[in-house]
Structure formats: C-alpha cells, structure tokens
Amino acid sequence: MALPYAPDALEPVISAETLGFHHGKHLLAYVNNLNAALPGSGLENMPLEELLLNAQGGMLNNAGQIMNHNLYFAQFTSPKADNAPTGRLAQAIKEEYGSFEAFKEIFAKAGATLFGSGWAWLSADSQGNLHITQEPNAANPLQHGLRPLLTMDVWEHAYYLDYQNRRPDHLAALWQIIDWDVVAARYEE
Ligand code: MN
Image (tube, rainbow, N blue to C red; front, side):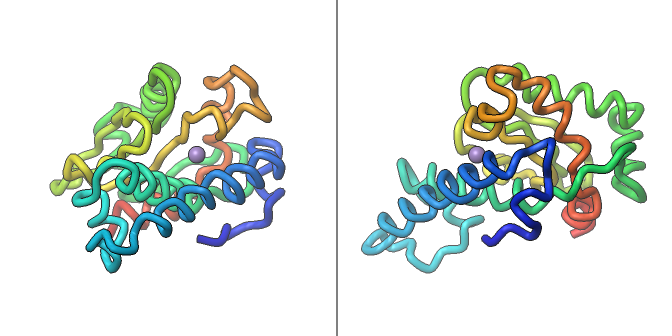
C-alpha cells in the first residue's frame, strides 16, 4: 500500500523519518517475508482477511502485520486542533463510553498498558457495538469476529525515534492526526 499523504504530512506528530522507516522498511519487510513464504503454501490467492483466519506461524504473523499496518497508515491525515469524529460514529462513541474524552482516555490506556509489542484497537461487532481491545504482536480483531475501525501501533518502531520511551505521549499526540472520515467509513461499511 502506498501512503495516501506526503512523508512529512503527519509532522510533528509522526516525523518523516519515523514514517520512512515504519512504512518503507518495517512494513516492506513484512510484505517481502509473506511473498517469500506464499509459493507452495496453498494459500497463494487468499486475501489478507482470510489469511488471518487460515495461515499459521510466520505466515500468519506477516499477514497480520500487513493488514494491521494497512489499516494504520490509511487512517491518518495532517494534524488538526480539536480533531474529533462526527455523525453516527460520534454518537456510538458517546453512547458506549459517555463522551469522546472518556473514550480517548480508555483507548490510550489500552495502548499504554499493553505489555511488549502489539496494537490497541477500536472495533465494531455485528450489531454495531463498539469494543476497545489490546492485541499482542501481529493479532487483529478480525480473528475474534470483530471489524477493525481504528488502531494504534505500540511496537517501539512506531514511536521510538520521535518519543523514545514515552509511549503514552506518542499515543496522546496521535489523536491530532486521526482521519475520522476514514474511521467513520469503516464503521458504516
Ligand atoms: Mn508498526
């Protein structure tokens, strides 16, 4: 997946340098690893969503990381003050968590307290109810029957160049660059 914005478009929240390594090196390595493992596996023509449910071992990890990063990089836009969702998604967040502020606090805590590497997620179930989950390593809520809407990558490669060990500061800054139109479209799907 090519980035839908310029490499410096997310600064100062995510630097062009971090984006260059994260998208250009880390994600590329997952893609190359999966492409190297697919031939002869019998899973060659499977979409990523199905690989997540059918692949195992290294192939599953690489497919998961590609899926996760595609969702992650597609959900950002240039920083905006007072950035917030609107419409039906905003209403659903308010109903489930009380307020957007309360939602952000619970979500950021899920990211900050995830031990080791992984992802914090906002997902919807088949009834449209919202769920915040922590997924270790390369896992994705699709594996529990949930539809992923929004994610924060808490692998150190996502923030260490810009924030060093301050993962919570990185997560707090990410709210400025969430493209809520993209997240709402995933919710309405
Ligand atoms: Mn990552």
